[in-house]
Amino acid sequence: MKVLIVLAHPEKSSLTCSLAHIAKESFEAIGDEVQVSDLYAMNWKSSVDRDDFPAYKPERLFVCAASKDATQNGTLTDDVVAEQQKLLWADALLLVFPFWWFSVPAILKGWVERVFSFGFGYGIGEYNDVHWGDRYGEGTLFGKRAMLITSVGGWQTHYSARGINGPIDDLLYPINHGILFYSGYEVLPPFVVYRSDSLDAQGFAQVSENLRKRTASFKETIPINFRRQNGGDYAIPSLELHEELSPGCSGMGLHIKKADN
Amino acid sequence: MKVLIVLAHPEKSSLTCSLAHIAKESFEAIGDEVQVSDLYAMNWKSSVDRDDFPAYKPERLFVCAASKDATQNGTLTDDVVAEQQKLLWADALLLVFPFWWFSVPAILKGWVERVFSFGFGYGIGEYNDVHWGDRYGEGTLFGKRAMLITSVGGWQTHYSARGINGPIDDLLYPINHGILFYSGYEVLPPFVVYRSDSLDAQGFAQVSENLRKRTASFKETIPINFRRQNGGDYAIPSLELHEELSPGCSGMGLHIKKADN
Image (tube, rainbow over the protein chains, first blue to last red):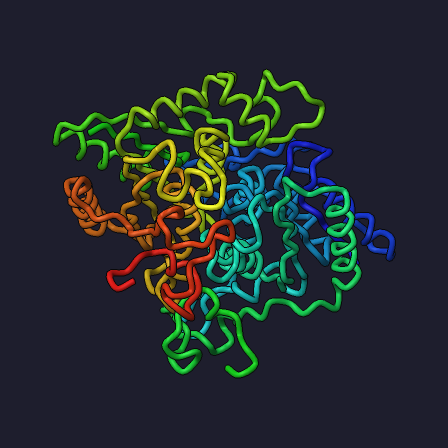
C-alpha cells in the first residue's frame, strides 16, 4: 500500500509530529511506502488568491471558474500539482494535526482549499435529476481510504454525546464527510488523543501502542458507513434524505447508514 | 455602536466583499462607527509558528505556553495586538466570508488562531470544581455581540435538517459556539446566502435588502440562546449537560436552551 501523510504542526518535537512519525514507521515496517507532506516544513502557501491561477485573465476573480480553468488546462501552480500527484499515487491519506478551535489548523485548511481544485476535488461529473455530480462516495479519489489523526486539548467527556464542545464525530463531520467522503475516500474512524497537553510518558506509550494497532489494522478497518449521495437514499436535487429512512430524525448522524435502514 | 468587520475574500468585486460593504454602509447610515479588517488586503499571516512569539526562548515550541507568555508579557506581534485592540474597541464583530469546504477560509481560521491568544481568547479564569475557566458565555469579549455573514454555493435544502451537507446550524456550531460564544460573545443567528454562484441582479437586490434589515435590527436581535458553561446546566469538570435537561437527546442542538428546559 502507498500512504500519504499530511502533517500540520510548527514544532518537530510536538506530539502531533510524533504521531505522524509513528504512523510512518508502522506502515513502513509492514512494507508500505510512505510519503509525508510536512506543510510547515514546506512553507505551504495557505491562502487561495489570484497567484494560484497564473493563466487566468478576467479582471474579476471567480475562484471556482479560475480553479476549473487551471485544472482543465494544466495551469495550476507546481506546488498544487505536486500534492495532487501524491494524492493520486497514494492508496491511503492520513491527515495529522492538532485540533485548534474545533477544526484543522489554517495551514491544513489552505492545503485542502488549494489542492482540492475544481475538477479534482469537486465539480466532477454530471449534474442532472438522478445524479448530482460525482461526490459523496464518488469522485477522483474513489477507491482510496483516509483517516484523521488529531490531538485535542480537552477531555473526552467534553466531546461526548452530551459534552459542551459537541460530539467529536459531529465536529469532525465537515472534514470526514464534507472533504474526504465528498471527494471519494472511504473514511476510517478517527484516531483522537484527548488531554494532549497533559500526556505523560506512560500515556504517550499507550497512545503510541494504540496508534500502531490502528495502522496495523488499517486495511481491514471498517469505514464509517456514510450514505452515498447518488445511491438512492437522497432526493435529487434537494439532496434531502428520503423520509422513510430514519424518519423524524435530523442531524449529521442521519448520513451514516445503520444496519436497519 | 462600534463595529468590527473581518472580511476574508481575495476578490474586491466578489459577493462576499459586497456584503461586507453593504453591512458597513448600513451601520454607518445609522451613526455606528465601523472598522474593517480586510485580511487579504492586509496580507494577513495565516499560520501559527515560532515567529509569532519572538520573546519565547525554549528550544521546543509549546504553542499554548508560548501564546500565554506573549499575551501576559506584551510580546505578541504588532499585527496580532492591533487586531486584539480592534476587538476590545468594538461592541460588535461581524465575520464575512465564503463558506469554503464547510468552514471559514484558511486566512480567517489563521486570524482566529493568532488573534485569540492564550489569555485573550482562551485560557482565562479559574479552573476548579464549580467553574471551568471563563469561557462559553464568559471571557474577554463578554458583553459584545457577533454575527456571521457567509455565502454558500449549495442549495438551502442541502443544508436543511435532513440535507446531505448537514444542518447549517450544526456546521456553523464550531464557529458560533466554539469560537465566538467560547470567548464571551452573544452570537446572533447567521446571515447565509445560498446558491451564491447563481445569484442574478434581482437576487442580489433581495439579499442586499435582507442584509440591511439585519443590520438595522442588529441591536435588538435575540441571540442564539447557548447555555452558559458555568451557569449550572453542566457537570464540572466533565462538562456534560445534566441528565434532566433534554433527557435522552444528544448533538449540538442540546446546547441551545429552549423555553421549557
